[in-house]
Length: 151
Image (cartoon, rainbow, N blue to C red; front, top):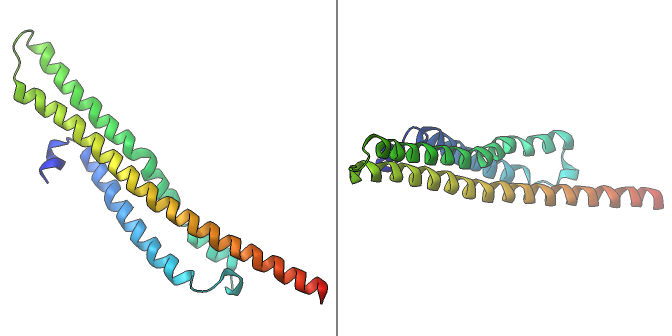
């Protein structure tokens, strides 16, 4: 909790991104496990299944994209805070205040990067599972059409 407060205002959207990332990842794990028990060729509505498998992945990708930017914004505001202190006091400055600005910069940067790295792992995992599932479907369709033409 201390880091959230020390990280400044941009920690709030980063916190929201992290909660959404965890929620989406857990939901997708549950959904993928449930749906992928049955091959796509055996599903009654394969197009709908494919659409549902893609659901929320754009949101996860958005989190991957904006989290480092939010972290960078926190870095900029933290450094602005430091330079503002230096500008006000030409020769004497409070090292505690300077360290708070630097701390804000580092915390938001780290938070944005951590969220991005974890979200990227989940996004790539789900994308790879989907690709494999769809590939198996295409193979099954190819085998089914070959059987029909030979039969």
